[in-house]
Length: 117
Image (cartoon, rainbow, N blue to C red):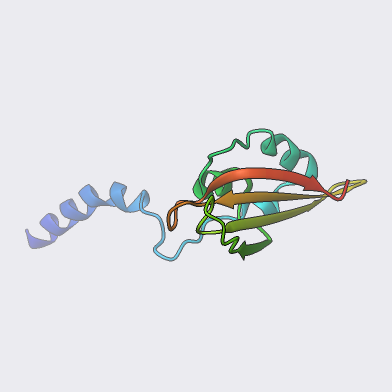
């Protein structure tokens, strides 16, 4: 009888185990999976004011980052720069996304530009 209860409990819980993500799973790097043409299409969806999370969902993790403290009153937290690089069949492209923040950890897209064209 005890074994029957244990089996019933296990059967009831098994669907929930199937939907649980592994504890140490890391988000995929979308930027590694993109080619230059796909990156150009996705970058067309960039908008001023997008959060870091929005940009990361769209383009993946950047290859490089840099932080500049401008010291000005318009952006007391400085400027965060994300750099992406892709190689196409006949060209390479780089995208620089600039974030600004007026409060700590509230970065939003200010501008972006393509390089290496």
